[in-house]
Length: 114
Ligand code: 5GP
Ligand code: ZN
Figure 1: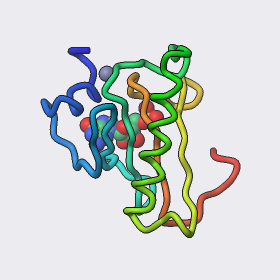
Figure 2: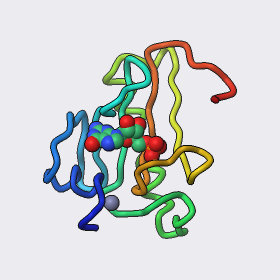
Figure 3: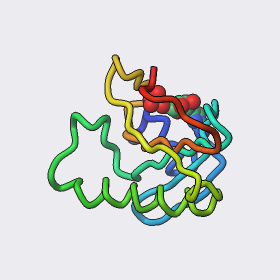
Figure 4: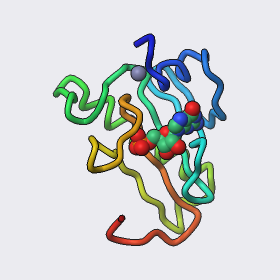
């Protein structure tokens, strides 16, 4: 999608600090990290939010989690623990409408989130 920030990062029109990429997904560091490790895992396919997800996307969303596991391992945070989440919609604070799994770790994380 031409006016989407994360589509532009995926096609390298806009730079980002990539930590992983394959034919279906990429992972890059959040511009405004909320923890020592804060990586966004993004499908190449433009899906605005979880609200627009279909059954056909199930394997893709599963794949994002497999990538999260790999990045957590590579970042050295797998053993101590980390969090992965999709913000969805206004009340959750979603600001970029191309789904992205936040991978957050490297410090103790409060629960429930604010
Ligand atoms: P959301 O609030 O939609 O769940 O998350 C969007 C995330 O994208 C935020 O954590 C924000 O810091 C990050 N972000 C916004 N613009 C950019 C950008 O241009 N590059 C990168 N790497 N991250 C961005
Ligand atoms: Zn997009």
